[in-house]
Image (cartoon, rainbow, N blue to C red; front, side, top):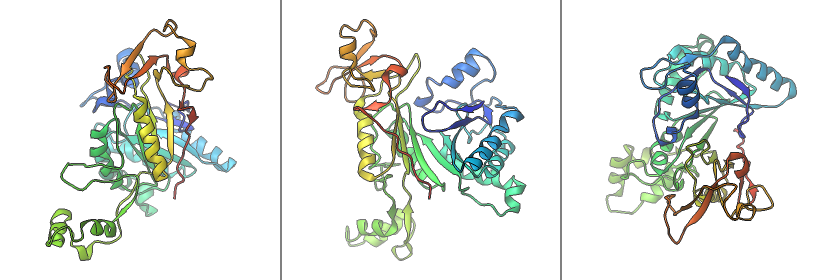
Length: 355
């Protein structure tokens, strides 16, 4: 359940337990459910189903990685958890406390916690620390300095709903895992309830900036500001919200993979470049632009002009549907290995620097 990972953005993966519940479109083709539930019947996915804690020998691996990292003078990134969700409602609180105890005892590891349940994170992290007698005796409070907190975002609706919650949760690094990317996403204009001001999650925003944006918009702007934010102008100062520190983008892999429109990935790359936010392009997945170079000297249109080697070709409109439009793009199912990791001929491997 833990290994030297093949995932491009981490060194190791660690699964303290196995099992989850599907909560969004990104979960539709979950490889973990297909393997551990449907194929091997090790644990049943879904709400109300017990999760399976991994064995003690598995929990010992991070201690070994930590010792090695200390000896070599490096830091290892550990993805937790690829077969579960740390903030799953079905997980016993004591298990989560044990995990955070392990995180605290491995200060030379950076723990990348990726969740689809960011709304649970604040409460569950606080509960985990309170259940950890070592942390309490040391006066440890959140955030732990070696926790990178990430959320899965696959479309604009999830971005609008979940990124503001991530920004309001303390962590050494906040990041987005946008895989599988299933639609266009504008990170510069989030609006969590369609009635509040838009949020640019790639730039930090201060109360002073917010006041300037409201100033003189109406004769009674100060009263409207207080009604809207719940705080008076005279009391509003300092940071209003943090920003995203890292963005990972990737297409879907597997037999039922849905194609990613190239422009979705390009737009996110360009948004990050403009804001100076590290960007990592993980993969195209099963589908690749037919006429684009993907880590090879030739494109697939040249290699396979009659679509005989890889017969599956579809035409994408700008919103990803298989349709004929002025923006049509051909993508071809060639498999993850052949599709590669190059976006417009460049491999993007940006990483954040924890503060």
